[in-house]
Image (cartoon, rainbow over all chains, first blue to last red; front, side, top):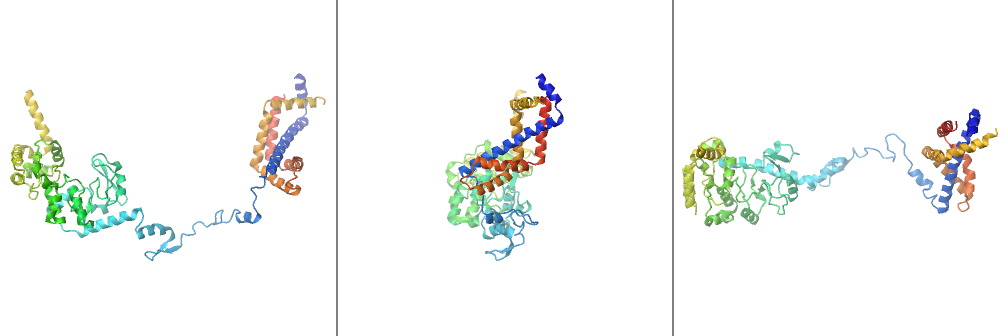
Length: 388
Length: 95
C-alpha cells in the first residue's frame, strides 16, 4: 500500500487524467456492448422491427405544430359557432346548447319533468283564485308545500329545512324522487315508495289528473283534503292532524259526490265509540304544539284536548281521531256549540257529554296565554301543595 | 513508470470492489437513455441490420458497427459528469 501511495502521489496529472479516461472508455464500451446484445436478441427473437410502420402512416400521424391547432391538427372551438335545426321545434340552436335544448324540447331527461310539473302547479295556483275563506286560512297555514312561494325561492334549492327535518319541495308524482327522503328523520315514514301516489312527506297530489276510481281508492287511504295553497290533496293518513274530518268529508263530497262518503273511515268508526281519552297523551301533545295564544281566547273547549275538537279556527288540524266527524269546524270560537256539536255527532253523545264536562273543567287553562305550559304547571302546583 | 500497470490494476480492483463501477455503469446507462442516445443507436442498428440482412446478423457485426459511433455520440454533458465522478473517486480512494 505504501508503494501504491507513493506511486500515486508521484503521478502527474496527465497520467491521472489518462487513467480517468480509460475508466470512462471502459464504461462507455460496456454500455455499447449491452445495447448490441439487446438489439441482437430482439432481432433473433423477431420483435425488433415490430414498432415500425410504413412511411405513409408515419406522415399521417405526425405531430402537428401549427398555431391555432392542437397536436392532432384539430381546431379548438370548431363547433362553437355552428347551429343546428331542432327536429322538434324547428328552431336554430347553437351546437353546444343543442343537447340540453333537445332534452327539454322532447320532454325527456331528468329536469324536464320537474320543470313541467312546476309549471303546472304554478298555473293551477294562478288559475284557481276562488278562495274559501276558512279553507284558505286552514290550508295556508298547515300545508308544507308552498305553492305560490315556489317561485320566490331559488329554483335550484329544492330542499327546505322546516322545523327540524329536511323536506324536499316541488316533488310531485315521481317515485324516484323518494330517494331524496333519506335525510328525513323518523317523523315521516320510510323513503321507499312503491305506489306513485303515496308519499311520506306532506306534499299533495293534484286531484285533477286522477280518475274517479283512483280518487276513490286514494280517498279511502289518505286524508285528501285539498289545500287552498297548492290545490293539491293532502297525502297524509286519514287521521292527519292538519285537517278535520269535516274537511275530509267535504272534499269527498266535492270529488266523488254524495256517495263518496264511504271513503271516509270515520263513517265506519261510528260504532267504535271514539275513545275520547280525557288525557290522550298524543292528542294532548299535538294540541299543545299547535295552539296559539290567539286561539285560546276564542275557544273554551280548546283545552278539551281529549275530545280532540278543533282548538280554534286558524289551527284547525291536529286531530288524531277520525271519529269526530261533526266537530262543527265551520264555526270557530264557540265552545258551547262545540260541546253540543260533539253531543250530536253520531254515536258520540256519551263521550261528548264527558267532553263538555272536561271542557268546563279545563276552561281556566284555556284562557291563559301560554297554554302549553299551563297544564304541567298546574300539576306541579298540586304536587307542591301536597308537600306543603 | 513501472508502477503504472500495478497501480491501475489496484485502482480498478478497488473500483469494482466498492461497487462504484456498477454505480457508474448504471448512471451512464440512465443518462444515455435520457438524452436519446439509445434511440439514436437503435436507429443505426436498424440500418446495419437492413444492410446485413435480418437473418445473418451477428453480435460481432453489431458491436463492430455500433461502438465507434456510440462513443462519438455520447453528449458532452454526460461525458463530463462521468469523468468528474471518476476523478473524485480516485481522489478519494487513491491517495
